[in-house]
Amino acid sequence: MLPTPRNAVPTGDAGPLSAERAEARLVGCVALGELPAFEQLYRAYHPRLTRFLDRVTRRPGLVGELLNDTMLVVWNRAETYNGHCKVSTWIFAIAYRKAMKALGRWDEPVQDESSDDSAQPEETGPEQRLAQSQLRALLAHALDGLSAEQRAVVALTYFHGIGYREIGEIVGCPVDTVKTRMFHARQRLKTLLAGRLEDWL
Amino acid sequence: MSGRVFHIGADVHQKVQALLPWYVGASLGADERASVEAHLAECLRCQSELAWERRLQAAHEDGDAAGDVERDFALLRERIAGAAAPRRRGGLATRLLRGWHRGPAWMRWAMLAQCAAVALLSVTLLVLHSPDERYRTLGGPAVATGAAGGGNLIVRFRPEATEQEMRRVLRDSEARLVYGPTTTDAYLLAVPAGREQAAVLRLRKERAVLLVESLDGRAAP
Image (cartoon, each protein chain N blue to C red):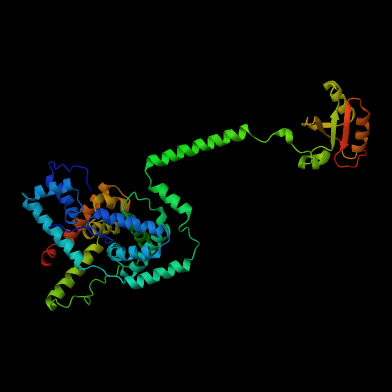
């Protein structure tokens, strides 16, 4: 069974099209300075941007600041959104540029906070928690082996359900480049996770 | 993600596997998804790849980062309030600009064409109906500057005066024609500074001159 794409703004009727329209309406309200509309958009995108920026930057300490930098652009430049792409594409593209700019500014070693198992669900047993913690650390290490551009394509594809054409718009490159980045990312991950991923589930 | 038909060719495994990440992410178009599923139904090798893709996706989701939305939004609200810049919010210009960008392309071109036509008509009307130079005031800036920049005498010639006579009168009185004739057939003359009174007296002796006046009022009538 295929997973359903993630929609940002809840709407009365189901369907990605209505969700996209609802988001576009929200951005229109934001352009008029309506803070409640902005807060609704912010809350809808906060988990998605947190996940995306965390995956791309691999620096948890940066995520909150980058997220707010991104949404501040949305607040200040909402009137420039012209509806030629999805709201999600527009916002993720802003976040991507913020992340790339920040990574260009920061060259300190990546801090691996994913090995911290303090947030494990209570119902899992000690052995399972340990295994998941180890595998998550392994995956984090494998992701660190990718470039930020590859991590962005991986995150947008697997965890945000975004198609390769839209990813091309977000990261500002042709579709073939998106596929190439994904190809190399998968090869790298396969090497780094060889024989380990099968034990996950 | 729809519209283009995805053709599976000779390197079918490579093409299908290249699309698997977007297949598990449910972002393929209907045509591509159908092609991938048709191949997966009969290819164990690509089914194995699909299983790996699903594990990778699940592994990532298991380790999702979580932020504090309340704290983060409070911080952003402070930044917004701190900026306190005069905003464009809700203005007519903003609404027009948004409407402009969101309208169809043909409408923008039509509006541009209309604006161009209006501009062209406006320019044409301005050229055709520019202010009548014949109603130029004699007390304007050019006059006020006197001989240095404008005129300082006003003169009317008799109706029967010939052009030849008028040229001679101007030469003899050392006057220079600045402007004229006005609607009352008057001419604005400029004479060198300090020579106004002499010029007035000389012009009054001319038969061709009907009237002469100094604009600065120092010359006696």
